Length: 86
Image 1 (cartoon, helix red, strand yellow):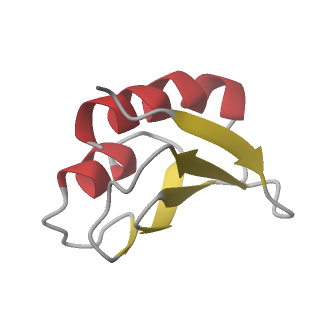
Image 2 (image 1 turned 180 degrees about the vertical axis):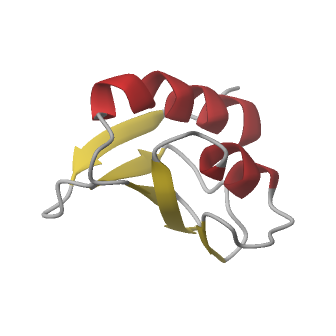
C-alpha cells in the first residue's frame, strides 16, 4: 500500500511540510542542494529545479524552495518524488 501524504503550510512561505500516514524514514534526513547523500529520496527531491533543502524525521519531511520558485510548478514533481521514493 502506498504511503499517503498530507500537505501543511509552515510559517515560512518557502517551506511546506509533508506528513506521512506511516513512518517512511529511519531517523533524520537533512540535505541541501550540492550535498553528497546516499538517500534516493533526498537525491530525487534535490534534483528538482527550485528545491533548496529538505529536512525529515520518521513520518514527515519539509521541503524548502528557492525564493523565486513557484509551489504550483514544484508540487507535481515533489509529489512524484515522494510517491516513488518514500
